[in-house]
Image (cartoon, rainbow, N blue to C red; front, side, top):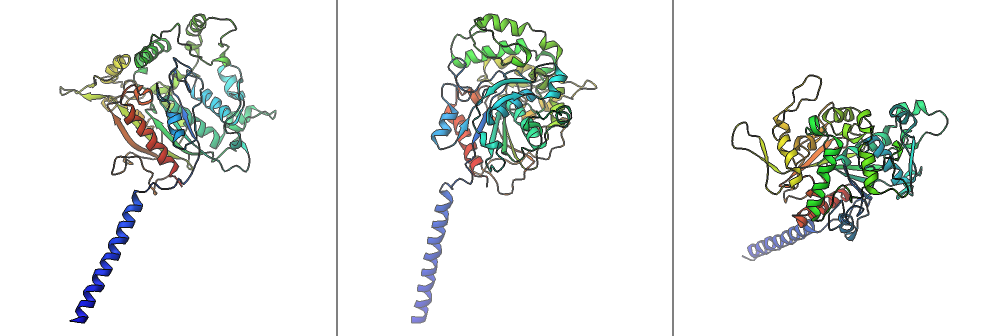
Length: 433
């Protein structure tokens, strides 16, 4: 009997020990883990974008609030550069490089000669000059919205590999380190949000600069609830390399009209309107490949639904920014099977008003990059880095539903929900070992 009681007592003790241990383990899983890196996060804007509050006293990243300040309040180091709002991804990448390490923008001798603009641009002080130091172990997380996602891909391609044409053309010792192939391992991760990796099918017939500009201004005015138009926007086009800088004493109206009436838009592929075209994006995809030492993540947005009537065109939800309705409706039914061009079919129809979900998922056209479209979110719906995540592979996190292309960053509605997405993303990036 005593032996039986001792066995029962031992069993109960072991049960309590295991229960206590399990309770501690469960508790530990719910405690926020210490960050595994504290690398700065660089948020790169898209077409017609800006860094902070240069336009209408609005943040590109956050609208009436600031995502940068929100993340900084939680201990993250965040930068929001302003680069060419309508320039090509090559030129923007060169400007982003100068913004990071400082110095005069060098667009490259070969590139500038090919496209006929000045080789050198504006000067930047540099927010992270230590990146250029030979013994630096600092890295960065790059996050790009819209065209910003293409720009950071271009920057990664140049940093990791340099450019052979620039190396061949520049024999006088003035080659920028950006083109040398000796700036590897700066980037820990790249995340793109609503980026047209395959271009936008709206570009096939209507993606010209001035209509896009009017659409942007209208969308901004609607989001801001203020009286903004082409005459008081104040956008610095940053086209100095093309000789289109604003002159001393020149009114903004005069500057705006001079930019818009320039023949530049008709004679070069070294501009955003080419890179955002489906064919131009395919050229970028073939050049800017996923790099083997960088983590890649993508997030798409969708604000359309399939019509119940065949052929099930995509229709915008009522909450879509009014300025995006025309482009969204067009994209929701447009196809292009023309020989010699990127094929556009019904897989492209679902969209956020300007970018298709398909295009935002990963590069397809002329891309051989590996991908995982089932990376997904954690069981609780949050963004979490997985220990088996491969580098050099596009990992698709999620589609943010009922969210248009502008509101995902402008956040004039669903602000708390969309802010939480950026907080989750920052937490995921700092958990990369």
